[in-house]
Image 1 (cartoon, rainbow, N blue to C red):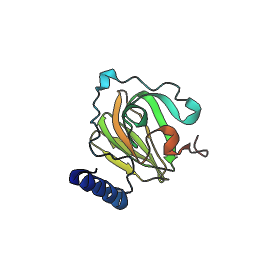
Image 2: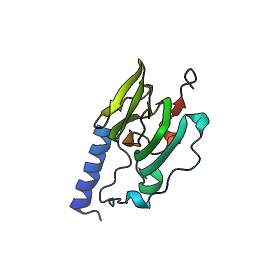
Image 3: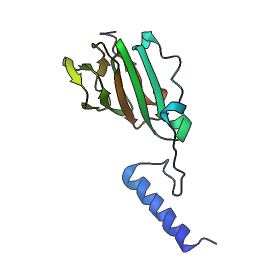
Length: 160
């Protein structure tokens, strides 16, 4: 027999799905928590795919937390860059926590520095180049994809 609370919960979950399109949300799901010191760096990011000397960590993603989003941490050493690219299936944001460089945009390169917050809707070309002599630290996220594969990642063939 279904309790009144279970019926209300099921109705609420159905309403959330109908209004937001979120299908992975589960009432009573557990919180996921980690520490940046405990998350390994992503291996196998290829220079040919636009990942130039970057240290990348997926702090939250489908694999670790069952999330349909990714929260990441990136350190770009001097001279490192993430070449111009886009995501066909998700939006991306990043925040420059430390350092400065240039953002790749659809209109060319633009200066960027600590405190910048950048939002790139899906299919919008973007990237980052550390042109300084110190590390650049970015926190970033993909909204709508829990992995590189799901994001629809493509490097720009014209600038790569």
